[in-house]
Image 1 (cartoon, rainbow, N blue to C red):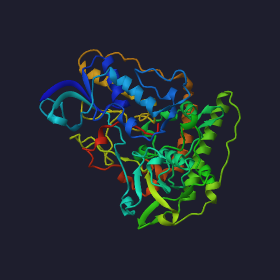
Image 2 (image 1 turned 30 degrees about the horizontal axis):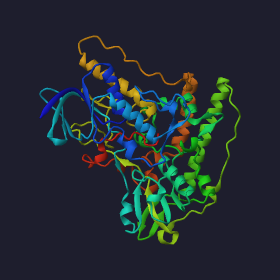
Image 3 (image 1 turned 180 degrees about the vertical axis):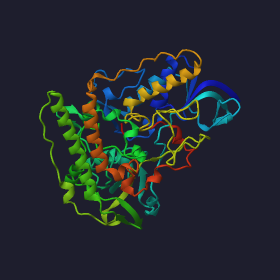
Image 4 (image 1 turned 135 degrees about the vertical axis):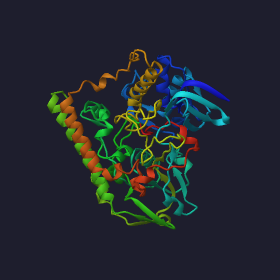
Amino acid sequence: MTTTVNTVIVGGGQAGLSVSHYLSKLSVDHVVLEAERPGEAWRNHRWDSFTLNTPRWQSRLPGVRYGEDDPDGFMPKEEIVACLEQLAHRLPVRSGTRVGRVERDSASGDYVVEISGGERIKARNVVMATGLYQSPKIPAVGRELPADIRQVHSDLYRNPQQLQPGAVLVVGSAQSGAQIAEELYESGRKVYLAVGRAGRTPRRYRGRDANWWSARLGLYDRKVSELPSPKAKFSGKPHISGTKGGHTLNLHQFARDGVVLLGRLERAKGTVLRLASDLHDNLGAADRAEAEFVRAVDAYVTATGMTAPEETLPVLHDGFAQPILSELDLKTAGITNVIWATGYAFDFSMIKLPVVDGDGFPLQARGVTACPGLFFVGLPWLHTAKSGLLYGVGEDACYIAERIAERQELGKATPAPVGMPRQPDQAGASMPSLMSWLAGAVMTAIWSAALSLLLEGYAPNAAGISPAAVHEPSHAENPASQQETASPRG
């Protein structure tokens, strides 16, 4: 059976639903195809205590009102799912519909979308909103571990109770790895943490949340063209947490609390792990990232004359007091569990058109590809630093919806904008030249301090995964391949 619609949106997470919201306002005929249920990535691919790292004022989706009574609070996953369900309820969403193939009809120029059950949908436009974090990645070293070690990817981790009795090794120290490690050791588990070079920002500084300062500094508005390398868009996010009302994550504090910090995991032979000697370098990179962030905020306060209380952050060195281990025997350490916080593979091979680069990432400009009518939305650094976040997905979705409406009205007057959602006043107005300089200073420091991680994807540095391994070309049929997981860490 073949049906026809103007636009097919593949993926029913925040990106796909946001595009659908704006297309509905523009009266564009469309359908959203979701492999599971809207918001599935948040519902069943997060641990129980998961909380967004972005405050509510920075986590609002178009078409849904929420969080106005607590704009500075942080949303648990149940609240995120409820918001997505509320949005999806009034949109043309087909749940349980898996897309297997997208190709273009050479005669008509339309797209043909093949879905489960043999149905085909012809469409003038296709929007890929499947996200980048599609299939959990466990490095090859995992196959070398003894069979009695319970291995769990962060995608399937739920709580400490699901693990075997004994100590836990967490591999990867970007946001997921650091947050899970903290939960585990606070539950009484002995934790070993293989550390990558993710940076650190304080949760709050000088009376404001770090994300408020980042918005003021213009960090979220930096363009993908300003990255030091194309691979930097796969970077791990800095240590920070929205749990317990929001708090700073500091690996030195972890060490003070009894966590054993390790360098990058290189290989395994039986129960013995081989570790890199980069622990202290990685800790130093995180310290420098925080210091540069603080200096940029201080410079902003001075330059603008705003009133902000003075503050000196605590300086910890406990991690440097830990010895650099070259080997670790799992049996001797009592480690019975390994949690892989080592990121995700992504795959767009269902699209039978030459639209990806050597890393498998879409070739596009602000989500618009060279193939007329084929668009992407909801990916990290699609256009700006906030493109993969709830904070920025609405802006990109509105842009794509307007491009689709222009194609529908080809030959007529360009449609009026549908009304971009105004970003909350918390971010305030900026001073372009000053913000550009400060943002450059902060991000240059963070990137230079953590470059070896940033060029290798979401937390893989701690497991010795090479840059090329961020993309794996064989997951078109993976159940997670149509789930919007845009930055699972907020």
